[in-house]
Length: 156
Image (cartoon, rainbow, N blue to C red; front, side):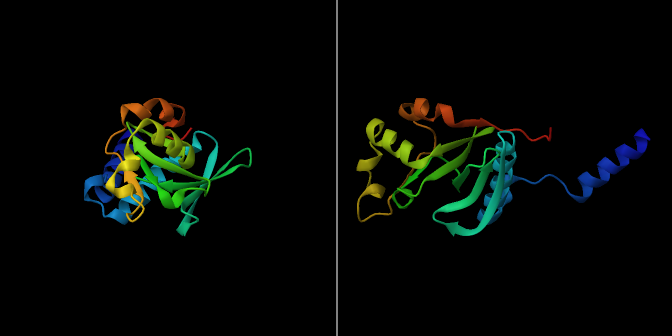
């Protein structure tokens, strides 16, 4: 019986080898990240629904067991966008084996007070109005701390 299990495991690994995230296209990375954040959110009582296009800025919806539904924009890193203001959006991005899921407008307020992003070229009125950090600035670590979700990859 054990030999049969090993053969099946090897067949699965040969037929469907693990992928390398770096080789994925932008759309494939977004799909991958959606699956990963959905798994992490499941640990916190959420079921997710992927949207085919950005609905009010959201990439997907997450419904909690309590009945509350959250609109979520999926990003690759800490990001603020002028176009997300006032829409009740939360933003999710991966970090250190887990995910940050933060209310956009609340973090925008903290970032305006604690960092200088608002004086950047990309935040000028004629610019895109989008700003992201390649790593979390020290000034925002405390504000983000309550929004960290530890990710898991196993069921149950």
